[in-house]
Image 1 (cartoon, one colour):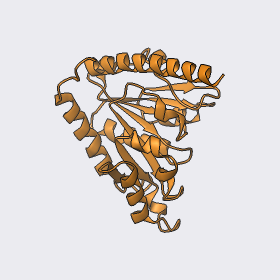
Image 2 (cartoon, one colour):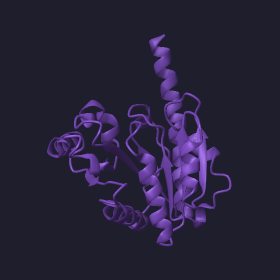
Image 3 (cartoon, one colour):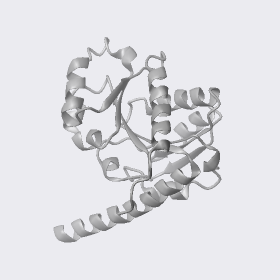
Length: 229
């Protein structure tokens, strides 16, 4: 039975990887930079994304977002108020998004006209680590309210990320957040990973976050495509 479960899991992940590769090529050809936001529930993903969408649109950069939740469209309706096109995915119990889900919800999005496509993954620090969604970068959020040892408890998701975003910095003092410990733990799990500290509520760190997104978009658009395996 265990062998059978392992075989099924490998098959599911292989199918997902193939579909993710197709998505990545589609995004690259359209010229859209895709960001996968992952975190545990309650880290402030939606507020960060809302402020990000508004800032980019204000700067004249077309954006869109795909939102994953087990149920409800609350976050999608909140984000739609920014003026950006939003697509909702309800997974109905599945604890992560998959490449096939993303592909099914691209209908009506004019990818060629977008600078950025954001994917707000389901709140979970385990399952999303295994599922490539065709993104250019994966950003893993860590809230000051969660504790400094989150990267040590969930090393795979942080190790798979390109950048760590420490959120709710306006609450750091009230939560007695040990910043040095958190940075040390992130460095232990993923040495050299970029860390950006933000408060979407006050605006702290948002300029750095937006600059990072644009720098990565420019850098990766100039880089030659990876050779086919």
